[in-house]
Length: 198
Length: 373
Image (cartoon, rainbow over the protein chains, first blue to last red):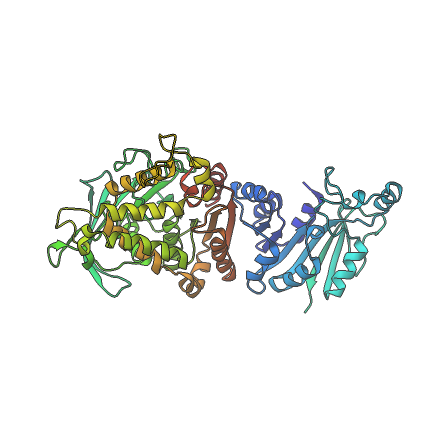
């Protein structure tokens, strides 16, 4: 099982209501369902939506920015964005809107500011290395339109008045609390657990 | 008094009711019958029943060979053993709608008050009226909860109406190529169809049976108009292009030059043999009157308490019930906090896609039903 999924499964209590944004083939939703957590997905990719529904999972086909407007206040206990935030048109706008529909927000992403990426960039002189999601990605066709570092995301979270409950270095499943975050230089993949404090 | 017998006119069964049924129009009917067919076996827990709601010109025979057309049933690709709605697993019920012309009480039946054919004395009916009648059938079959209610087009309207009016009976719904309400454009198409029927001199204010004739031309043109809306520009282009019908040159007349003309005329003509003009008027009117938004909002509590799972599906090339309208359903259901899934299926064959071989669509329906426990 993916490490970030393991952390998320431990983090979310049973019987919670969850919205998985950019749920892909629905692997996480299926895992959450096994733990008696009702999870609904949102996915833009048509093929992936068909695949989720074919598995009997709940998913809405469409753009989260539009769909999220429909949900009632505090409809979900948790909103999850794994490997999604960097592909969102306006991450700040989305996170702000999500505040209204969910008490907790979990955001996982690859740290684009880590040393290895920076060195790769310096040596190659090409943005491909920073913007790559898969091998076929180039700077002009990548989904990663907003590469960000752990520091970047921490700043955005605080600017949007979220409380950072905890953060995780996903690769070795280490938890950080009390405002500490994994190393911006060395952590490859990070997970933020945010809470709306307003 | 209610009684179930074998249907002597068609395969399947007949539920005859002698009781007053108050309709949305304020009028009542005091005696009515429901023609229905079933497929598969009802299990001992009575929890594997699926109700299929047919579209405007459908009937109670979605699966196997249709006794009406002698061809495969209208949803034979979807319903049957080992098909997405698997009759090895599910007990499938499909009834002819109120106002229909395949055995359920409609405008061409005898009015018990006057002992004459109803004609236009038949009360105007709504989608809710159709669903109330289906509910009586489900009660009589002793089914307390339907595993799913499934339908496309006018069937999708009934599906939403079921969830809104009888949420306690419904575990899940599959609403295909539907809408919360009939759009102005769709009402306009319906009106063109109705005018075509009513302006046919043989229609005789709906009393054509007494004159032993049918408004064949009117009904046939109504069907031609409607059939255009069921396809897509691409579907027409791919199927016919500008190909000529069994000729090399244009005729410079108004006979059939193009294949598409021949096709449309055939669609119109063959429809007349299997469908009744007055039923067409009543059923299109029921669709025009449909607007279930408020009832869904008002019954939010009951819908949520019963944890109904909704699946909403649309097709990319459907311009009669476009994706936008399915998204409105999703948006409303999300806003009341219910459990919704939605997908837009890629197909270039227009509104009729839901009746055709669309593997993605089948996969989704099969998967969704498998997930309903």
